[in-house]
Image (cartoon, helix red, strand yellow):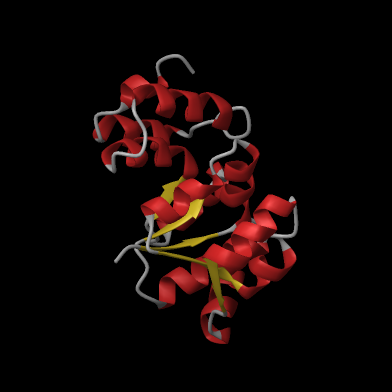
Length: 167
């Protein structure tokens, strides 16, 4: 069973590009922090409906949250920190994010990060997208979030660097 934790940004981006329903086709469980669920996933209506049906919420432990707040204070936002705390404490496969800066800090703390741009090739691997659909997804997605060097490297490692050629 594949379980992810996500903060608000990937969900908002996916909603904006019309691909929010991709997540339940890729993951068995989608989790976020109670903070993100109630404070950051508030609009548009499509996102609220998706949240209510597909996303589970949980709280990180006080100790883990305080530790990560001290480690990341001023470097990444509170929602990302709460999701990182949840990821660190439980059996999740990856933390879905969209922020390049947060990505680097989280990886340095041993967190398995998946950028929402990578969902394009994950969808191909799962038979949900063909190459044309993945390219269309990426064209819309990069208007909101440019790929970091790590994301570009991941596309290359996975054999999908051709998807980034026209971007």
